[in-house]
Image (cartoon, rainbow, N blue to C red; front, side):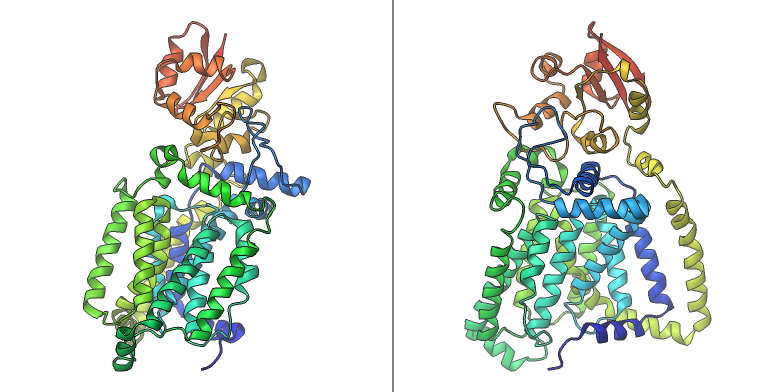
Length: 504
């Protein structure tokens, strides 16, 4: 079996690229480039900037006044530094495009589970998958875990077929992943699942008979030697993840985040999948079309692939943020199902070159204005922030009038990350890091959710328990209505996105 060589693969892949591939790639990149709307982006960027400035990982929370004695475990400390470095040199627009390319690469790499599928089919499915996941896209650190997952899938298929000699490089890869994002646990879980399914296949006489009869339609099985190698690689990959600034506490922190009931109740991305918007509806269309296409062309027996797809589908139903993981494994199935039709369409376009040139030209003219408008919107990200409905003007006013605000603000959970970044002069009440933090009868996330719900006693709680003396919130919040009827509070600023109340 011919071994895989990276340089040769890149040359072969580049040689297969044509104008239509390039056009589709640019369209998909444009689809995947979003404004900065992730509520956690701000604190990630501020953490990275502080890391580059001090070369020190803080042990206590430096950004909130409500939990300053909390031992903060930053799952993404290294990613934060890289994001800050890119932002300082390429700006927010460059960061958006880089993350869009990472998402596309993850989908294309994962789709390579199916051999000999054309780049056009993979790119078209990647674009469809991005639309089905548009509500969860953008500059999000978890995108790095999607790329890591895609690499694990890609390497397993090539190792099983003999195109990779070994997987020892997984060990430093998982060490890096564990310091980039807490999603490395997904990669370890996938390795464990692959090992179990391959072990069952190797012991199953039923599947051995299918392999013997239908060798061209049945996926191969790892040999006993390969199974042993995969076991030790997975075990050592898990052990090396303990080499991080927090040691075993990293696992404890991730476990507490995943098991906090209020997180699933109040944060949409941690809740169960539901038809909450257009993106979810597009995903349902994606799923239905993929199933229909597979019913017409799919005739293989692939227990490992099926088990992995089922596991990731269940994980997507369990937590909305895992939908991208299912899209990774399904992209190859979908691309394989439509590849025959795409190849016939491509061959027809090659014969009618003038039509292919017109399609390419019209496509470029259609996407370039939008791309240029996005790229030239604003170098300091003010326009991108405005698209994310963050209170930039209110923050600028508060900075310019420090004598009219207090020292302890109340802010909504979704604005915390933005305020950590854009208003470092003030420490926040809460931000996206603090969903499960509990210490000395302080459970800030629970209290913030109660305040946002307008529960009785809200005003007295923020004053007496936390000493809040000014508030920045959306004008439609229940707290805004309460404060407007409180004689001890006054409205000092108002626009379409935010109101600011201070104690008299």
